[in-house]
Every structure is written in C-alpha cells, then in structure tokens.
Image (cartoon, rainbow, N blue to C red; front, side, top):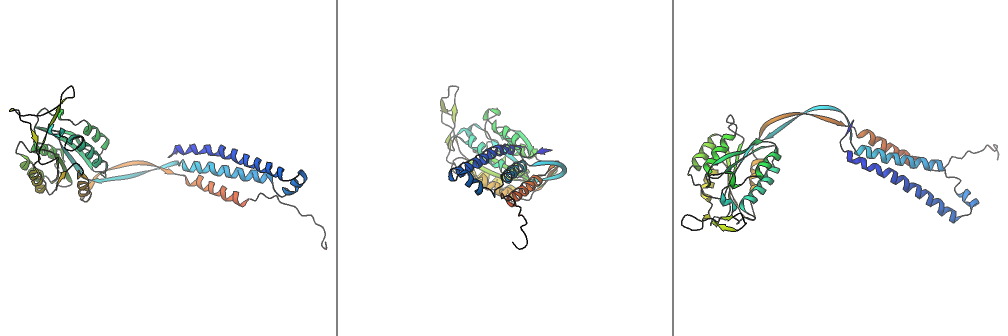
Length: 341
C-alpha cells in the first residue's frame, strides 16, 4: 500500500485535540450543572442521560475524523498500465545573441527580456517539442528538440554573446542551422520562432527562408527593439559602461530591419511581430501555434496506482450517521404493574 497525499496524515493531530476538547466540554457541562442544582436534584435531572452512550458518541466522532484523514491521504493499492499519447509540434527557437542584444531600449536589456519571454512562452506549450539555436555572426544548435522543458531552460539561461566568437548578425545562418535540426522526413508540423534585433549582415536570410519553406517549416519572426536605432552598451571589467564604436570612432547603433523579417515570415506562411517595451507579442505567436494541426509525437506506458480513498471515506460517513442516530438517553425498563392499574 502507498499513499498519494501522505501530508494529509498531519490531520490526525486533530483526533487527540478533538478528544481533549470533548473531554473538557463534558467536564465543563458537569461543573455548570453542579452549580445549578443540589446533588439530589442533579441526580434526578441527569437520570435519563447515559454517560456510557455519551462516551460512545464521542468515540464514534473521533473515529470518523481519523478515517476522514485517512481518506484524504489517498491510500492506493493495485496498479494498471496506461498508455499516454503526446500530441504537438516541433518548435525551434532561433535566438539572436549578438552584442547588440545588450541594448537597453527594452528593459533591463533586449537579451534578458527575450530570455524571460521565451521561458514564459515555453511554459505554456502543451506537449510540443522545443529546441534552441543561438546565432550571431555564426550559429550553433544549443538544445536539440526535446519535451524536457527543464533542460531547455538550462540551455536558455546560459545564452550569452560570449558563446559565439564571430560577431555580427547572420540571420540566414541561424535559419539554416535550425532547419537542419528538424526531422528531414517530415514536411509538416515544423515551427521556427526567430527573434532578432538587427539587420542581416550576410545577405543570405531570404535564401535560407526559401529552403526552410521547402522543408515545410513555418517561420514566425519577432523584431526586438526600436527601428530608429540605439547605441550598444559595453561594460568593462570594472563595470564601467561605454558604447561600441566603429573604426572611425563613431558610435554604432543597432537598427532593426522589419521589411526583411516580414518577408521571411510571409515566404514560409508565418507572421511578423514587433516586440516593444510594453508588448513582446509572444502570446500572439502561442495562439497561432495552438491553432495549428498537431501530430502524435510519442506514446509512453506508465503504471498508475488505483486510489482506494472511497473505503475509509465510506466508513467515516457511516460512523457519522451512526453517531447521529444514537441517542444519549438511557433506556428505561418499565415494570409490569397490572392490567387495570
């Protein structure tokens, strides 16, 4: 035997507490009666009451509480095998980790906020497999497709521009790496979530999107930050903040290219969203994904223990009913005094 909610056994502490309370109430009632009447009168007043029956009713009540606690602990015995099928999509998150993601037009900065929003997004997926690709001037598969969302979060947390030596924004390389991570045998059920804040420095984004579309991948693009361009902060070892400059000493700004992201999305049947400080748009992407056709991903057999809480619950209810039906009045035997008395 095992118990599904063993913490409910703490409720058994109510039994001795209730016993003490009932004993005190019985003593208190007796003391008040003694103050109300003389001894002989008191004997006549309580002559019809059975102390044994009162104790019996208390015992039944205490037993009922104990069995209720046992029922809440969910005793389980006996098992049966069940088959659980999982339905969903393959969702690959393609994340820009270039230095421009340190820009603070979205607080606390673009990278931190993006990771927070992606984590919320993944928490609301219903059985879909999820993977992670990081890209800057190059790209690599950070987390293969998995249903282990805890493992995904670990890989997401460590994303940082320092993970990729080649800086820049090669969107095409990110799309290519993510496309290869999908099952090549499938031509459906593939979704790519592309988050970036910059322009494509390689010029291969549209070609990569075209190849992804041939593989049945739908790309939803999310442009992060302001289109007007913002400076890129850099912190030194002492925590001092400066801004990235080009070879001529001019401050470099990061400007998003919404036209390119819109084109990538439309080429694959997806949609483009603009993430702003007060609205990140990933909830809209989630609605789109939840409305798509899904497939059976896998099936797991697991052993389920049978709940048997019904038995102690039935006993508890029977004890409560019995306690209610039993009177605390003693039975009187009438003596035969003759037919014509």
